[in-house]
Length: 158
Image (cartoon, rainbow, N blue to C red; front, top):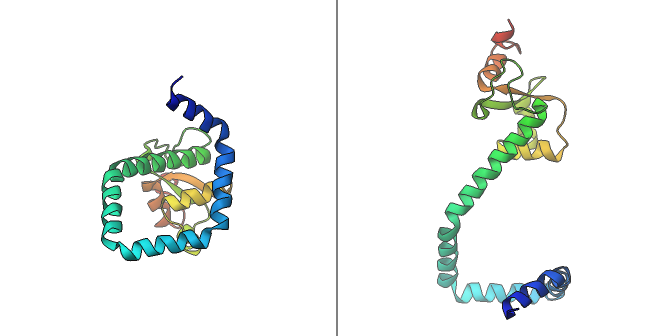
């Protein structure tokens, strides 16, 4: 067994203990660590900015890809829950995910999202964290807009 393999096995076996130890050390020396970080940033502002820029540029594509995948997965999860399986519009049966939205059954969804300060994917996260409240449904964008402009009734239902 190579040294590297041994080290990896040892780390896996002792990971919890090591993380706990690091956390305890940080809590005991928090102010000292933060002051050293501040000093370094003050003494080396250009170096810090360059490193941050390089790191950002190096990982920006993978961060975007991960974010896009996460948002797609989250939207699919929320829409699937409110559709009881296959995501589809409750009114017309549209199944293309890009066209589907969450609709507040009683209306007033925009005011509620403003009050919660949750829009877009942050709203999906809120729905999941709050165990999917029952007063929501899945509609396609057309049915949702039609419902808003027609006293709460989608033109398909007339």
